[in-house]
Image (cartoon, rainbow over all chains, first blue to last red; front, side, top):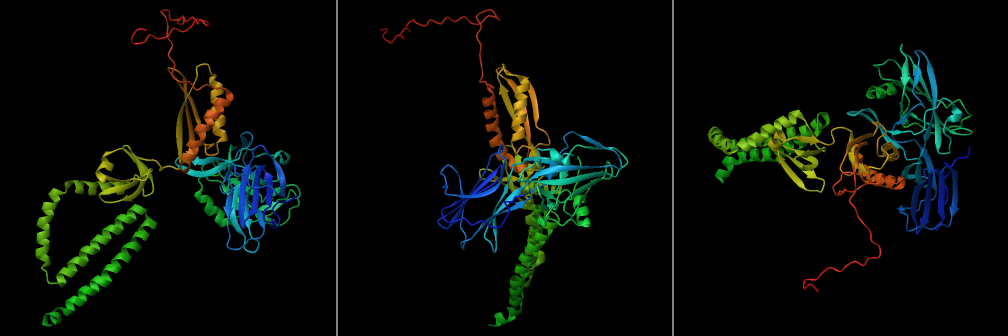
Length: 261
Length: 282
């Protein structure tokens, strides 16, 4: 698959570079030795990832952000990133998972992008979501975690997972290790443990496993540090923010009340 | 010269106490404040550091006075008598101090919280033994005595991480209630600051004089108050305009005797409107 997250792009003085990725378009213009940037989103659009150079000038109607560097930075690049909070996702309809069973969901995650200037020592100036996600709360009104709500459902059939150059698929397996039927109504997916891989047709994350141990016990998350096996994947493009070590994960989840709610 | 020699030792001791003791006290209280703040909370840090500072100052003062040859016993006796007199004169201050101790123990709020006391809303900047200091949202400094805090209803606005914004919405009697509720739900779904969970509260509350009244309660993260309020009010109006939902103003209907019959009005198109009489009757 074609990637917009390639080497830095050169934008000559007086020209505008247009990065398109799903609903997001980022214009970067070099003018009088300064850099001007403008990010716009059209929620209905799904632009394939592309970069073009144009003579487009900065319009007075738009609010451009202006950056000045000590040295003239050459090259502008987009770096993929994951949302900065955990994601809450629901299956299309509540699902009952019998004891000692497991189920795999495919979660389509809209990526964020970091806009960087410079090649030798790149400087990140903006961290932009490709899709503006709605806030949601995971927990009790007095205690919990502020998350983003995914509008798309967690699906069991990979072909039904929402596609797009700005989306990555996370294979999420839920195992019911308890002795009771476990109703899955919504799941919290911490993005800190996600790494990004480039597949042949999609972006992928490392697979995640959530264990349900019982009704009054918090769920345990197991991020697997391996590329997904659904497609031929290249090397990891973006490492997880937190290393998925077993003990670290357990400590992290002692802070969580529950992965399920 | 003799006097100087006689008191040289005392002078050196006083100088040492002042030049070593005072800086040590400053550094010590600062370190203690940081430690207690880290272990307990900012206001405990402030109170304990202040207490240590004043005790340290009193000890240094007494030591210096003793070195200067003052009779500390007599001074303390005088201070005791003065204390009784001051005690009578400072009942309000004592009440504030005791109220302050209760406030600190009970911990209804902490430094940095937004609170409301009576009509005053603001951020807590300092919790002292006598009073608390607030910075209001329009940047005014307000000092509230601790006694007032104990006696009044205090609302800690930022106690919990999420809050609900309740908006009263009225629509015309002709509108479809189910459609209005669906529009409000869509508005909440599309606004990124409005939390998906807990779900928005949409209640049909009243058959009011001129409108059907709804309560639209949307949950938000406590840091998004202004962003949500600004955006969702505009979005409700835009969504109602787009769907042709009327937001009514107060109506009055006049009846001419029979409750079911409207007031008769005859519209005469071509008749000239008579001019109003002037003062002279011309």
